[in-house]
Length: 370
Picture 1: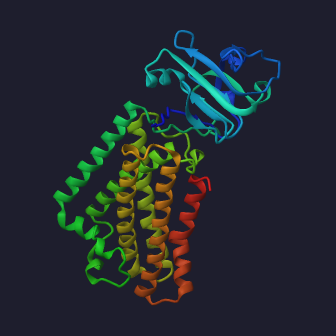
Picture 2: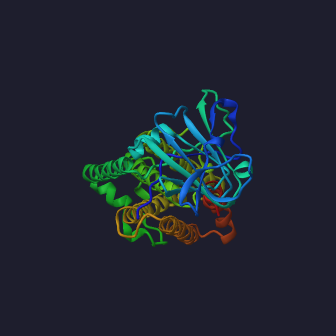
Picture 3: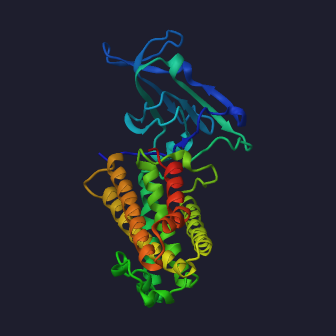
C-alpha cells in the first residue's frame, strides 16, 4: 500500500523554543490502547506506565498554533490516522497541523508514536507552538516533498516541465544537443579532436546544465522524502515551503554547484599544468552527469508510479545506483586523464582529488546517513 508522507519539519538536535511561543502541552491529552477492553483510554500522566504506543486526537475546532512539536526516542514510528508516515531519525520533529488537516482533507487527526516500552514522562513530549520571526539559525528545518495526492500533482507538473524543457532544447539546437549527449563517448577514454571544439562557456552548455539541475533537484527531493539514507540535516532552513519554489530553489543550487565545478576544474588544471584537459574533463563529466540524471529520473518514476510500491528500500536502491554510476564515472575520468595528458598516475590522482574525489566525499558526508 502506498505510504503517505506529509510536510514534516525535522529539527537538528534538541528543539530550541527561544524563537517560539508555547501554546499548549498535550501531556494530559495522551491515550493508550487497552488490550483487555479493546478501547483507547486516557493516559494518567505521572503514573510512569510503559506502553508500546501513545496517541492523541487533534481536531481542527480545538487546534491553535503553527506546529506540533513531538519529542520521542530515535527510531520511534510516527503515525497519522494509524498509518506510519515517518521514523524518527532525530529526537524531535515538528508537524504543521493546519496544513496537515488540508493534506488529509479531514477535521481531525489521530496521531500516534510507537516505541516498545515507551514511558511518556521520560520519553515523549507533544506541544504546540506559534513561530516567532527570529528563529535561531542553529535550528535546521527542512520541508519535505509530500506524498499526498496534491503534491503528486506537483511532481507530475515538474516532470512535464522537465520534458518540455528537454524537447525545446533539442529542437532549438539539435547539433549541440547531440554533441553534448553523445552516448558513444561515455566510455571512450581516448582523445577526440572533435570534442576539443566544444566550449564550456557556450549557451548550449549552460542550457544543458539548467536541464540536469532541474532533474537532479527533483530526484534529490524525492529521495529526501522517501529514502532512509538521505540526511535531512544536510539542508538548512533557507528552502521555501512551497513545493514549486522549493524545487526551483534547489535547482538553482545545483546549477551553481555545476558552475563552481567548472571554475574549480579550470583552476586545478592550470595549477597542475594540464590546461588543455579542463574542457575535455568538464564535457566528459557533464555527459556522465546527464546520463545519470536520466537513469535516476527513470528509476524514481518507476518506483513512484509502478507496482513496486513506495518503500524506503526501493528508493535506497535508486540512491545506491546513483552512487555506483558516480563512482564508475570517476574511474573512467581517471583513465581518460591518464590517456589524455600522459602524466604520471600520482600527478593525475592529486589533480582529481581536488576536482572530484574530495568534493564527492564531502557531499556524501553532508547529505547521506552512511
